[in-house]
Length: 88
Image 1: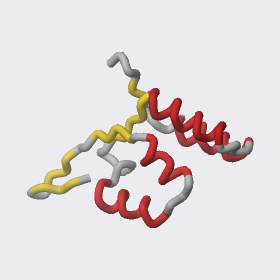
Image 2: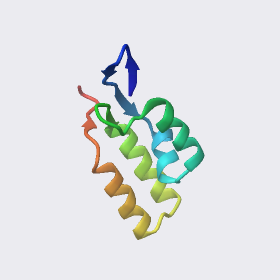
Image 3: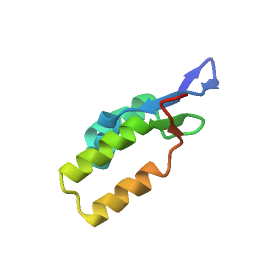
């Protein structure tokens, strides 16, 4: 969230696959930098996932043989976001 002249500016973020991986792999250093500079998960900002990124991250999870627990974590993470269709 950016503050200009004491006004909050809402930002919409379309999170790509690389950003999702940073959070899912718990890369705390880089995630902290993203949070500090962009605050993608703080109100009034809105983070959105595309169906393409969801497909890519699921494919990465399958190819990397993520276990059941990690797959549940992935699906739980995905469920927290609005999803943008490619036909929008």
